Amino acid sequence: MRALKTKIKGLNKSQFKRLKELTSHAKNLYNQTLWTLREAYEATGKYFSYPKMDKAMKQVQRKKFLRVLIHSQKLFPLKQS
Image (cartoon, rainbow, N blue to C red; front, side, top):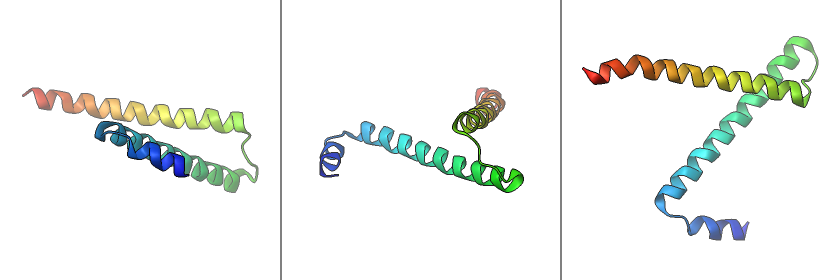
């Protein structure tokens, strides 16, 4: 833990900001995976295997990415005017 703190102290502002974004994304993905796993267990009474869960989470991430793309394309014409 001490070595990690030392390396974080040596980061510049942009590196620290990027690290913060990545850790936030990892935390959100982890929480979403737990939520999806719990929902699937409550619905079926069975746990997902790792490959099945990985496939489900990839689909969720694709849907989120597509929503962001569609939203940004809708806003792009507004920025041009």
